[in-house]
Length: 268
Image (tube, rainbow, N blue to C red; front, side, top):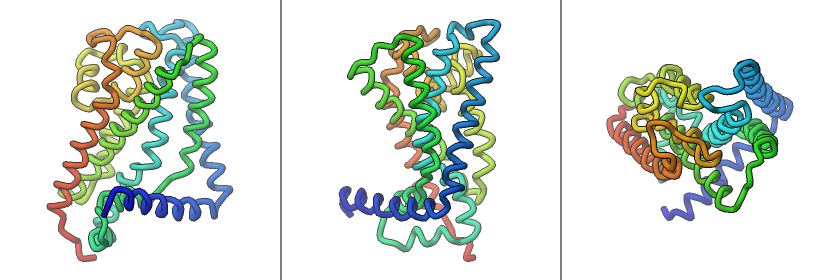
C-alpha cells in the first residue's frame, strides 16, 4: 500500500472516530473544560510556589509557564495519536488484537489510527492562551525562524512521548500486561517536564537527556527560545529536539514490531 493511500485511509478512520465522539457533545465539552481546569490548577500551583522566592533554578514564573505550555501542547498531540497504546494489553487479553493482523494494512498503523481523542483540544486552548500571555509578559520577539523551531520542537516532543507510550505498550507482547508500566515510567517522566531540569540532580538530568530523552520535550527547546543557559549541556542542544524525537520513535517502532513478531493469540 502506498504512503498516500495510508494517509487517505488514516483520515477516513479519524473522521469516523470524531463523528462517534461528537455524538456525546456534553461529555466532549466537559472533558475539554476539565483538562483546561486541571492545567490551570498546575499553573496556579507554580505561582504559589514562586510567590515568595520569585525564581526556581534561575527560571521565573513566566518562563516556567512557557516551559509548561510546550509540554502540554506536545502531550495534547500525543494523546490524540498514541494514548490508547497504553491499553494494548486489554486487546491482547481479550483476543481482540487479532483483528489488526487479518487486515491488509500495517498493524501498527491500524492500531494507531483506531482512536483519535478530540477532547485534547483542551490542551491546545490552554497552550495557545499561555503562549500569547507569556510572550507579552516576557517580551518575546517572535520571528518566522522561532515559530518554525517551536513547531519542530513540538513535533519532536510528540514523537518522544509517543515513542515511550509505544515502548510501554510493546511489553504486552511479552508479558500480556503493559498499562501498569505507564504509571511507573510515563507518569513520573511527564511530571519531570513541569519544571526546568536544572533543579534536579545531575544524574536525573543526564538520564532525561540521553536515556529517556524527555529533556528534549520542552526544557532544551524552551532554553533556546528564552535564551537560557543549560548547565552541564551545550546551550544549543535544544536544536536537536526534532532529530532526537525521530530517532527515539524509530527505536520504539522497532521494539513494537519485534514484540509483534513474538505475539501469540490468547485464543479468546
